[in-house]
Length: 513
Image (cartoon, rainbow, N blue to C red; front, side, top):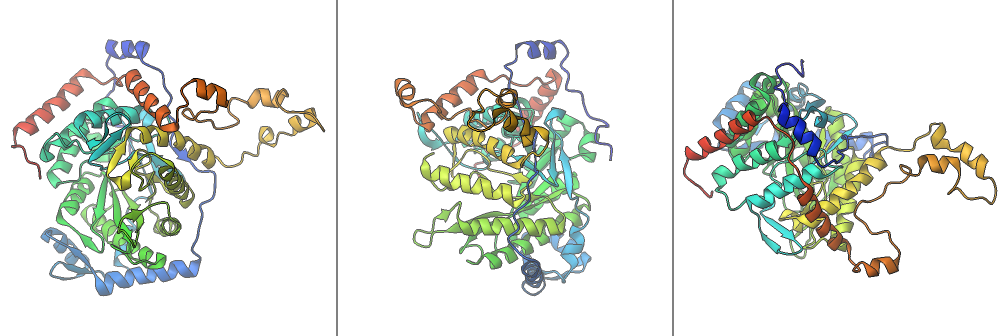
């Protein structure tokens, strides 16, 4: 496949050169390439049992494809037993169909330097997705607006360790539901040059996402390359609704990527046991990925698993738990055996504030995802209150901590410099390493250091206002937004995108459903 043919130029001529001279300099890290092993919690016997049981679910119990006669026709033609909305998939059929999906793919960004490779031993980090509320230190908790959405896109663009601009980083509730996807996509396209996600809330909105991407990249390039990822949530248990499948069909036909993701709340939408949940996850992913390949063989897809458990006293979802870790590890093994990229994990927490509970739950969730072999991590920063809130302060706190994942993934370097024998010889018994040649040559890069945390002595910390991490994060939010400068974009391309948005909005009355 030619991955560069037909791509439109990003050059803005003189405007581009002027922007380069005046731009605030900041660094964006490349996506993570793991040099550490994946944690594999299931042995071969356990994996085979789960795979057998998942096929039994598909064949005996079946899955529902509701409000989508076309999907039922495709399944019937492929050899499934269709009774009403229920699709019974013969053992082995779904796995056979999944075999045409690529094991990895490149998602292209407007800036080619920001392209990401999804699959293999790579990990791509994307921000929080979907909250209707936002929280900041000054305004507290409130409904999100388009201004908030634009701010989060800017923060994502400025975040060194974040590789992807994401999708619905918050819901701009001040814009009609049937039009807000246009403003969100426009923000991702012009306020950032990182990869982005398309709309899935209605098939026509997915089509708008494809159309806008063709303006940005060119028709031929979009047809031959992946420039968007989309989040296709399964209505667990075992139900594929017409809206989500309609969006999946749009993206698959356009050769754009889809995350096929069961929405698992253990004890509510899946069994309370790890093995039972993994069985349902695999069955749902097999059916969803297989359907994408019925629409277009070779369409890029990601094996998704959003996993949480439930507090049996309150009914609230819980995060960062051992059971969630077990499922996350096990689902990673199942995804690799299918030969598919894997999505799971995130900065999950149930806390209402960016406090110690949020930090503990988030740290557990991020680390389990790294060790599980996740390839695409949505919700990597900014998640608060069980996904109801996008938090400004937690966004920058999490984004800072993503640097630890980059460094952990490097593994232990065993070259001559890493062995440090010269340093050990130079210092000898009873000496110290601060002044030795090896330390002087390596001190800038030897240890990961947070750009946010306070490492100062108590007296200095007290003199500077005795600020906690949330206060430091609030200051960082203000600075990043003040320093933000939009990446250059061809003026004609921007005008074409804005005209498309204006025309589409004019074609339909406002709707808030």
